Length: 473
Image (cartoon, rainbow, N blue to C red; front, top):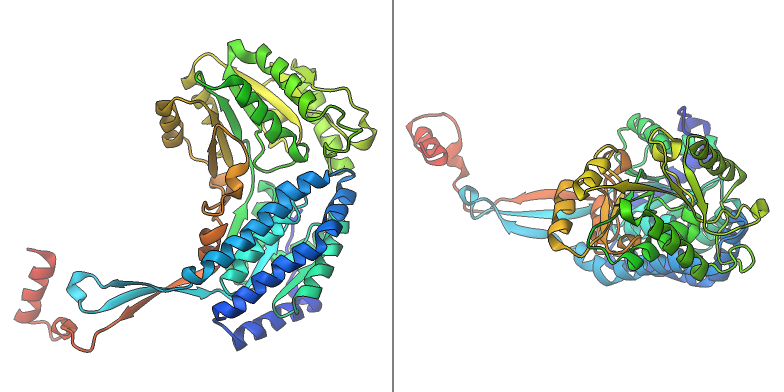
């Protein structure tokens, strides 16, 4: 937890790294596309060369993280982020030129995308590769230098990533910091030109407070209670299959995983039966096949077990989708029904394979229920009725929305990714990330021959005539 702020002066090594990056940036404050392309290509080669070691290190940190999930959910979108930037960032660099407003013609205006300087990135434990590589790619495409703080909860991967980055980049370009929460506190307090944090809302508040000491602008990617709505016109089997998938990959330890399901009251029993069948199809032997991820730590295992037991004690019905030996921190998908609204699983982001069902009697009742929570990072609607889709899109604010699917909006690099309110601020991915890590500097270019001197003092009849024209009196 980032509960207090450690001053960066107490960590001269990090300050030296920051100073080295600042010096490198000062020597080349507007890198040409050729340099940015080399950085992105180096990042891509780093992933290619380290793929096997990356999968093994993340697996070791989790206890069990299927190699296939690391490939699909981390390596693939990481490479796509780099590829997308290589294809488009040269165009993003071009100034956006326009004529000035008509009263100032023939002057011209432009927006010049200028690198910010040194960007700090704080990476969480749940997707330690993609949530490092994604923002690094955006920041490098925008021409910045980058410092990255890795999670202390993924020690094997964090050490490997630091090694891979050190081999691929000199310290003045990209550097990696590892260490515990104390290190994280000090890192957040460094005077970066921009700071991106991905993690919980509670820790995000502390990061923002630390950054405020330096007036460092922040992008916060947080979480919250992301609902999945099964509407009256949903393809029910499809909806359940996609929700089960979204809740089970990485054992639900995903910031945009469906947090709870709103569904017609008459469909509750059918959901449980269908979810059980879908889970068995996807994970016929969750522990034995090693294709179902572990809960990442004893601390999170105990948290989830405590929340589940509390719900049951307050009257909830528990429906485990499989019988699994808990010794390896394998928790099967567990559906909860008749959950008391005051339970922790209905108040906090779950971040695990517990799935409360909330029955509704009318679609309007379901939408009213969503309004009782802060704006979520993701919202999922399963319904083929276009009118109902428009109603949900216009009524509810969320970081991102998927209709008739889950999760994959995060992998669309033409779409910005970011939260709203308690689920975050700012966005990145693709061009949105390039803009986040750039100063879109406004430039006004006055023409040699112009009439602006007509507005100069002393203010007399000529000025009054001009003002009548401008104000249309």
